[in-house]
Length: 379
Image (cartoon, rainbow, N blue to C red):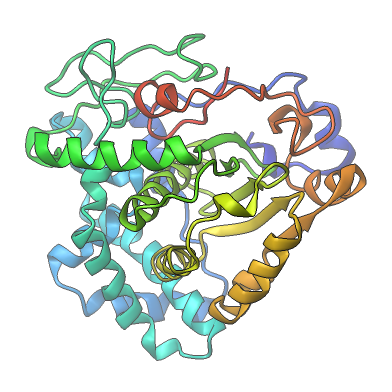
């Protein structure tokens, strides 16, 4: 039973003392995800989302469905049986999920009629940035395979790695979900994307670590160590980790959840290392426009004065829904009060919660190369 289906005393009594292993990425798990209902908030949403999908071309529907990592690895698989799981009905359902998120965002802005425009703009963004191929840009170091395709499956049908108690992935196992060659980035694109992401990760580690109380991914951001910033690399690194966070939520929750939680450590983050305001503004707009209804909360730990001032400057560029998701936390008491409702100690790093049980040590190179794309980094 997923952790989010019990609450109160019963949930506490039945909660295991150790974090259970992550699911095995198998055909059965893919079917579970594909069977999960689209989370419409009201009956009228289904008809409105269907109207959006009906206006799309077949290629647009496929691109929309691939915002689901599970659908993407199934439809791109070199295994005929796996690919057969990505049926027309599943494709439409996953496209409807994307339509619902854009519709929900536009409803919050009072501009429901612009949902189709927003939807298509997002598809254009994903095409221009080659987001589908971005998921496959890091290779495993030990076997030359891909740390992203279906988890840790190597390309060209090689057997997938078994990560039980290996590589810091906390019990992750992966089925042999190899990806067709034409779906992968070419060598030049792979090298370019890897270099850009690694450059920004070296300046400011960003990764998925742990799960919240609803089995949604927790994206963690450490302090930046330099103000030097290539804007494209800065944005690309965040897109890459956002995709990993969204994939982790989908896999861990078996398709029942779509959002993620972001936690930023500002305790030792000096203003001299802040990226240019233009880059921050561009990133904010990129994520809001192309990842609507993906953020649950944005928790900022120990924000100094300059961060609070920066947030005040950014407020005019944030939509009302996003503003309400920002949680500023100072001091141990506020960590307990404001963080613990979202993350249990066993899923928290020490900077998030007193007594957080996840190690403070993070090897970002290992995270990018050796941890399955959909998995949280754990040691």
